[in-house]
Image (cartoon, rainbow over all chains, first blue to last red; front, side):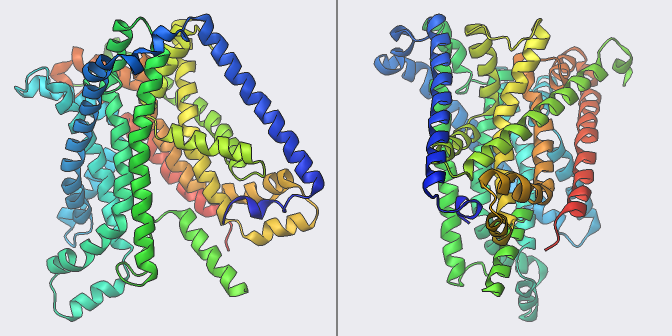
Length: 305
Length: 223
């Protein structure tokens, strides 16, 4: 559904006039807000060229602060995903095990770490490294942040993998059994490849969550990532707080929009192959209620037509 | 091992702040998210564009950045206090502002997916009766949409409960801030401290998920 078309008719003369009125009123409200924000900023001398120009004219802001910060963010995110992906896959498979002594502990671990805020995990991990390891103190924030991210995201990915495998048609397992495959082989040769293909978009969008969560490490644990650079930049370039936050926010938005766009592209691609009946027949991209309902509604429509 | 529980740490007080942060932000984001969803499906292109841009931008910004920017940018630089009198109150309100701005986008997406589950015929019938856009949306579509998105909204609420810990970044005295203080002072009981806070969040989030899951199955419109 394209959203609008269902809820209102194609506007006639009066509706068009009314929509024009709404447009004007909304535009005025937006303009007022913008004017108020700019006035407040100008009042506190946040609009002067000196506060914004360093980001354009002074390459040192980028080479000394922003790019290394971006590197720190991407490093932490990359380490977290590289470790969390296999751990999450193992936990997800563990929850599907036939043996209760594997299934139950895996389930407990997944549910426990999913219920706890990632910040608590990071703070706990940081102190853990202080007490029980000889990790040098300047590397501790990175270790702690990656540990927290891995514990949390591995359990989220475990659920994604499990949902992906459960969404495959039963016939896949039955057919594999019929040709004489054993459990392990069914999983690695038949189920997992299909589930991963179907789950890839969701896994990539989980990357956005990881990138966003690295910012916690900068704010609370002194990890030198992108957000943490705001402190040093505002200290060195004359209290240009708002300009700095704006630039940093834009950087985050660019990275995450690229990731989200990539996930969307993957999803469209996998949906395309599904229509041609090749890779994942009948797999749902996410087991959420809305999608299922929407699909059911669409089916009803077809029956009516 | 758990003797730190008897000392002068205000554990219950910290969790109380967490709960208050959650409730205030939940109410705010439900309103703001529904408003955004209404704009996104509305007939006015400018409002649609604004809501779409807002959701895409804010969803891709770290919550930590929003909350810290509320504190350093709005409060310390522009001296906006949101009517708060002392440090704790101002911090609390800024945290709620950041959380509402962020969580509203997820509420918007959930509500919008709920709107998609309402059969087209419902809106058509309402329009045939001469209802305008607002009447169709508020009287016919949204009540049904909300009933079908109780479960997704429950996950948003649980995520919000966990996200309130981000307020620790601007020194709001909630659970994560207290835990950070305690793991440093009571480092000999590190695991016990972690267990207590973990248990606190499990207690806060688990019943919400179970209860709202049950409610969601009860109220969903059977089609």
